[in-house]
Image (tube, rainbow, N blue to C red; front, side):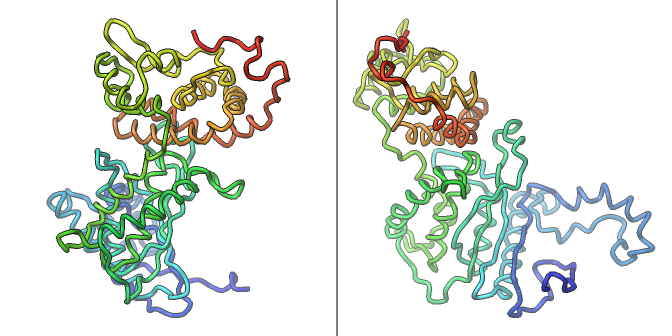
Length: 430
């Protein structure tokens, strides 16, 4: 049996690994994550004690007083004289390591690279991360193309409740050697191809694939969607800008991130999204709300009647989920924006768990998918605005979606006298 064959472990710098390529080489690696962890500094805590006890056993391995640090491939500014120098050190070293892997990589099997650096630097242009960009730049510069990415559950789920920005998954890059015959394309052609590839990929990631693949958690979605986008970008020798210069990885990532929030929501929800981005849960001027609502094809009075906002004293503010009425029933509600449905679901989930929110989801019928897409959109928006508590509410709903759907399926069907429009349904607006 092959698993009984003896193995061999070799310690060496990845930039100059002496192992030669052969037909039996499979590569799976988990490289350092930019400046996330100073591994050598952390190791010193244990090394000094190990050296005292095991130096006679492993004299070569424990010859130094502390852990060697000069060659460690992390972007630590204090070792290299500044942030820019550290980034350059990381880029050069990672590129050399990736080129070394490329030489050894098989043509008939992919190279697997784990990466879990949180993509957390957000702006109006999208979400980005210096560490993530630098790493991807090194992978592509070495000659790899990215044929896919897969989120894999490698982190404790408890971290999601404690730190809303923590990764729930590691992202696995599936890489192959880029063809020597790879062509160059224009920015317009690249964007046109993204328009075809990304909507389908985003739909699969947010819906999952039955029991075999769960939806990607909101905290991971902005990284996971990079895979299909970078698969398009990296298969070309270059994507050329209008001035003829190659497109940077940062620009490509910004274009990929623009595909978030393209869903075609109803007019009331469109208003709420824009108002929330400008004002959050705070009050804003009625005149500004009136102008925005007209542009979205709705009205402030209509949305007040729908139950998503409150007006008074020349001010307007959106209602928080905790302010929504507990006796609401979507089957008798004549005006139910996706915004209202989402926040009613959050209220039900926070107050009654899967069973309460499942019953409500069953009553929403065809609105369920749009509600879930809006939760993803609002999580991304709250993360960018630094509203951690609000982001947590949307993330918790999505990560519990499978259980809520199961509860919805098990929810008892309403009796005929309880169908929409029946007199015995409770009043849904206050």
